[in-house]
Amino acid sequence: MLKTAIELKEAFFDYDFNNSSFARDLEEIPKRVDFEVCRKVVSFLEKFKETTELVSNVSCPVSHLWFGEVLDIDKHLREWQHENASFKEMIEDMRKKYDKYWGDYKKINHYMYFAMILDPTMKLEMIGVGFRHLIENGCVPMEVDENDSDETPLSFLTDDEVCDKMVKKVENDMRVLFDMYKEKYGTNLSSDLPKPTSSQSTNTSSRRNSFFFKKQAGNKFSGVDDELSKYLKEPRLELECDDYFDILNWWKLNSPRFPIVSKMAKEIQEALDKQKGEHGKEKNGAP
Figure 1 (cartoon, one colour):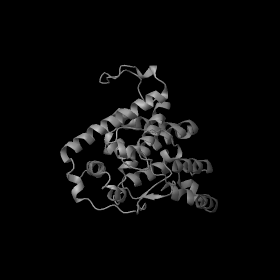
Figure 2 (cartoon, rainbow, N blue to C red):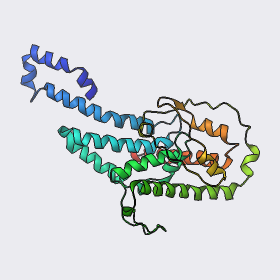
Figure 3 (cartoon, rainbow, N blue to C red):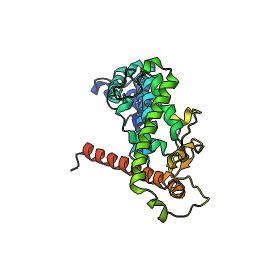
Figure 4 (tube, rainbow, N blue to C red):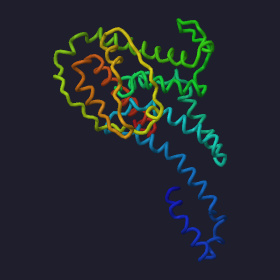
């Protein structure tokens, strides 16, 4: 509606000029400054429209992109909070709602982190980029975690050390999940897997100009040579921001090399997609 109003702004002025009753019948007619405010509001809300369209996409898996979108929203709110006093109150209200659900990194479903790590274009490297953004913007509490066996307070560590610690915690949590899969499925997964091919098509899920691909880090990670560690040690796939990537096809092609990890990737995507569907039903009041 606001976009349409902006496109038709000259019609408002022409009508006011040609019809004297226009101003008389209305309490107030729009001024040019009002349309400028509308333009800013539209520009501000455009990011939320894009994110909603991405997260609501049911034609391809997108849960591996969610954490990047969460950080994009945080960055977007921070930029506009300081630059646009004309609707500062609206942004502050949105900031409060954002912080309620996403302000504490510990409240974020770890499956979102796992889904990103299991995207071969992101892996642990991009988790580090995201955590570093949170640290730099004061989104990581510095108090001692009572459940943390490492008793060194975060306030005693450098930002890089805090980031490394956070990344390692997520990696360890994912390794626990991997070990559960390994114990349950063992080598049974490899018997019915298709033979690998040389083709690695990258054409379904859009690689948008998101947070992670604007700000890449160069961290390298190593580990013992089990299946998960082999996957993590391989260099992440380098794609251009506008390239498309079919993550399901990539895991299908690489499942002979990573049978257990590929099953994890598939089921984590399915779990997050199911959660998204259930949330949508609750929001729409469906039974």
